[in-house]
Image 1 (spheres, one colour):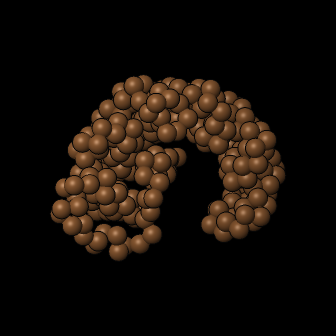
Image 2: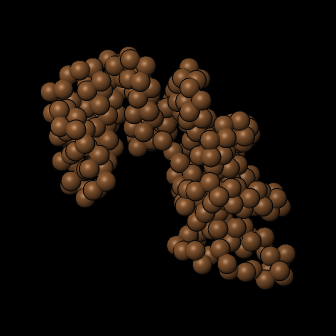
Image 3: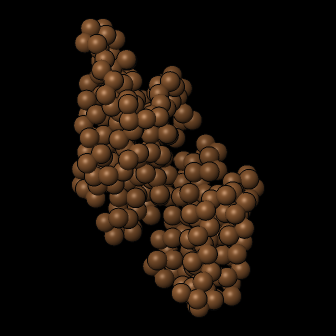
Length: 268
């Protein structure tokens, strides 16, 4: 899934390349009033740094504070006539509301951002591959619908996003969406169909050297086989995933996969 931090990495770092969020001290750095009035970009930079830091904390209180910072940024971006940054910021607000579990405002903001991308996606204004921002927003809308239990519109938005990422050649994003679609079908009991999407994700991950994507997909395939009752197949894929996580030194994912192995062998 794409969380607020990933949305920010997707767009806001492109908006202001010097942007960083390395510590809590950014929340208390005052900006002289005269500078803020004369140079809105400096104010935008400060507010976005604060919003990014708050968003990474992930608590309800921090997310609401991040939303307030993003809202404060939008009039300044309008003053700067930066429609790209506005669309990314609106997307970030939508994702923040989704992380808070407030699906309707999340959809309101994400649909507002979506309506902007067709205008923004032009060589003159686009600072990401054409269609990239739109595809990410489509994916985020799919996430909201999935959290509401509405799988049909969720799959529709995922497929729209997938089609754009295929057109612009974004294999890493394709893998993430294929995993998500596969998971929806597995959860619905359509395991063979889910496995088809997982296998696509696995093939792409291996072809581009996307090791974490490969490991996650192997784990997902294992879970699908475990759900079908095929413990031996599940164990085989879990062990492959485990070796990838170990190679990357990802102890948390390694532990999670080991738990899945224990389930496959009857050790719980």
